[in-house]
Amino acid sequence: MNLLTQMESSISKLPEQYKNMSTSELNRLIENIKRKLGDELFIPGHHYQKEEVMAFADARGDSLQLAQLSANTTAKYIVFCGVHFMAETADILSDDHQAVYLPDLRAGCSMADMADLQQTESAWQHLMQMFDDTILPMTYVNSTAAIKSFVGKHGGTTVTSSNAKRVMQWAFTQKERLLFLPDQHLGRNTAYELGISLNQMAVWDPILETLIYEGDLKDIKVILWKGHCSVHENFTEYNIKQVREQHHDMSIIVHPECRREVVELSDYNGSTKYIIETIENAPSGSKWAIGTEMNLVKRLMKENPDKEIISLNPHMCPCLTMNRIDLPHLAWCLDSIDQGQPINQIKVDQDITHYSKVALNRMLNL
Image (spheres, rainbow, N blue to C red):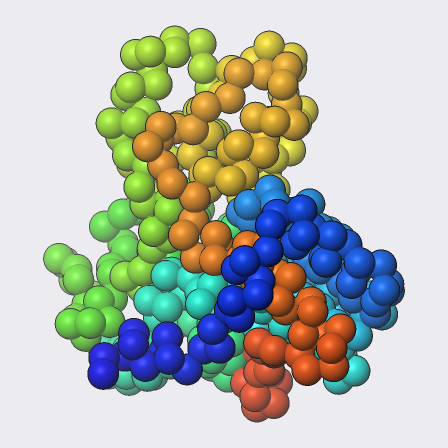
């Protein structure tokens, strides 16, 4: 039995009764339970969730924002409509009387999974031998709790796509070099904006346990983990070329998880929040090609009918792991809570929680 099969077999299967319910029956069940539980229930929905799920979200936002909102509620039950690392962050920040649930445990994140604790500890040993104690680790919040904890233990911090530049500036006041986990593209784009040249950046390959770099090691300022977002890496220079040729007056805005070449050729780049606010505040009649997850692009099209909006990549699919969360799984999760037999609780180990909070608080205190 391979690892994937073992994981699938360890996850509770969606009962047939929810598979066989109609959309209207699922909606009615969810509405009834929400009404019954009232303020004891809080459903945060990430921007990349599909519309059928977002219809029941009490708040929508990015991962850290939703985790903070969850912790600040009086809700006893937090049903997080997002992916695994987001639910972990909500559990880390929430109080003991609160419990966090993920409607489908298969909703993971390929980027977060590209850096596990064993790989990171091994990489750290290798890098310490190369550079001594000159490196500060930092991780994108799109990472597992174990990685956040590792960073916290070693004096580092978390970053978001909104504050990465400011936090990286602080990090360079602490150490000569940075190890940036797990998204190489956000790390590269942020460092480049701070004036660090590409030939001062190396890439650590966790599979080959090799530092990819040509030049003198003493010139390295940033070590990028070889990870990426499977959605944002699919936007290409060719996509931009097509938009420029077919839509001469269209602005291009992308997320900094895109490749450096794509960010450089676009007109604007920034976090999910930045993209949303830029589109909402754009003048009526303006035209936009957006390089981010398709569920969000479709929502922006729907909510901004006075603007012409397309996806930068016309063949882009929604985030597959985000789309694991659907009406049947949400209904099952809520019904299990209502029946007093909740399923899919996300509970982070206390030691990991402690050091993850250290890393998160270093960022928030900036």
